[in-house]
Image (cartoon, rainbow, N blue to C red; front, top):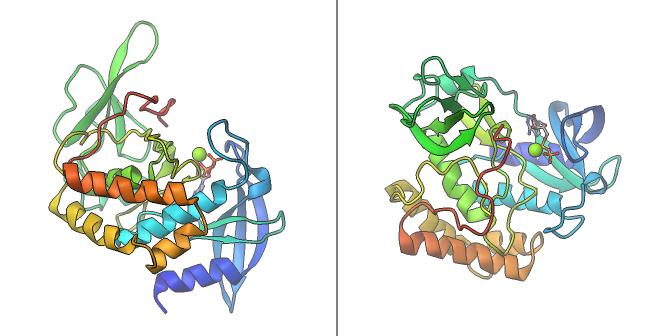
Amino acid sequence: MSATGELEELLARGELRVVGRIREASNAVLLCSVAYGGVSADCVYKPVKGERPLWDFPDGNLAQREVAAYLVSEATGWGLVPPTVLRDGPYGEGMVQLWIESGAEGSASGDGDSGDAGPPAGESGDGSGLLALVEGEEAGEGWKPVALADVGEGRTALLVHADDPRLRRLAVLDAVINNGDRKGGHLLPAPGGRLYGIDHGVTFHREDKLRTLLWGWAGEPLTDEAREVLTALAARLADGEPLATRLAELITPVELAAVRDRVADLLRTGVHPRPSGQWPAIPWPPV
Ligand SMILES: Nc1ncnc2c1ncn2[C@@H]1O[C@H](COP(=O)(O)OP(=O)(O)O)[C@@H](O)[C@H]1O
Ligand SMILES: [Mg+2]
């Protein structure tokens, strides 16, 4: 079994013990340990019962969307979402996801163009090394502009993100899963140069809800790699394919059709999507 398969088994079958609660979360997010066959790991458990109702998503299935996001990420081969399963736990059914020990140092060893650049001189970053607010209107070498932000006292600053291939892949994944909440705190640079995205409860809506900080490539051609990955993904989303069958258990038929449409649109246009104009494109606060 693959390493990811073993982690999925650990998360799905292991004994789940709650060790704490993450306070700043908007839903119930419990820090747990999970143990199976002599192996243990830290994880988060988000019980469906602890999901805060949202006006635009049906109640009681954000956990399913988190798992669907993981499955699509795995299908891309990019491994951008930590292993995530749906299972029963002390507070009923929920999603259980491997805990990622994050640290900004993880981003420094990334394969990004700007991996070693750090935030532009003298400006504030978010701790991940991937976002920054800069004065003036130039993003600077190795950075991509997102938007001008009002930072109070009549001042504006330019919000920028790193021109980093890992973020660029995540931007493609977000376009596919229609992520409504890609903010700075949902980017976890891990040791070894990997980057993970978390918090995928508000995804897979049938309407365009893409709300993200990662607009730096909007309108730019997709990389050759992204086009290849999307072509392979389109095949795996066809009726009867295992991925499609699993997704059909987690999201509605209309939502699954919308995933196929988004992949087809990306391949047809060949560019990173632009904001739709129908929906606030940037999560605020961005971190
Ligand atoms: N898999 C994970 N690894 C490490 N930290 C996590 C993980 N999942 C969540 N967290 C931490 O918990 C916080 C709240 O989780 P999040 O998924 O954003 O919950 P909510 O749905 O309430 O916004 C995150 O901002 C992050 O700090
Ligand atoms: Mg969150």
